[in-house]
Image 1 (cartoon, helix red, strand yellow):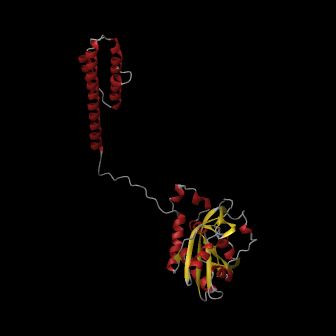
Image 2 (image 1 turned 60 degrees about the horizontal axis):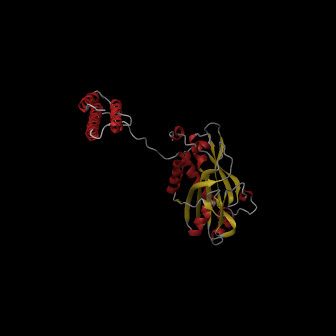
Length: 336
């Protein structure tokens, strides 16, 4: 079998000239250089030639392959250049660019920052304390008795790790930010004024007003001769800064094991149904808490308070369901 290589080259040259796009070029390449293309057929038919014909035919086939490969390479460069020219001519550099959408702080982080900023202006320092706590810090040092229901596994997340300070106890995820009071008082002598923002964990069923994880901000001020009027003045100033100077608020007697006397702070909410709503608990630090922290009996007094960040954010922005904070719905998050 013989082939007219000059004729094949001329035909290939004419055909590739008619390939006007990538699809046409690819069809040409497959026709000649593909696994079932013309050159593959030529190579497979070499075995049918005589010994005298094979060297010359093999040389001509190789030259033909190099020629067609060169045609394909040159055509690819030509197509690429045409694309770049077309792109350059269609590009209007005066059109404003598409800006990158910037993220922003989550509403809960914004609320924490706002609250912390207000207390920093009142002389408080912001402190961090661990989320994994000991039973001593979370319960015992806060004057919570051993048989209190909150110590039960149904009300506290215990972790599968022994307390290094008590071989009979396990570590836990803090159920409140109050254990931070103990850690800070153990490491610092009064006077001190700190707030402790952070996550807390309780095995609550998730609904519109409850979550197994939420945020609190704990406040502690310790010095000599701290009394309840100091607490009222501090929290009244804070509430008026946060909710507006015309806010109505009240202190309602309550019970907390770690403060005595204790109170809950209510504000009169005018949004939606007008009513009194509780926003935080507070009180004068119980002497047993000072004793557990290692302070000399009767030497110091102090005030403490704790507020829920989600509750504050829901009130300020009219958010009806706590689950909205954690669903990562961009339509919700972009509103704040």
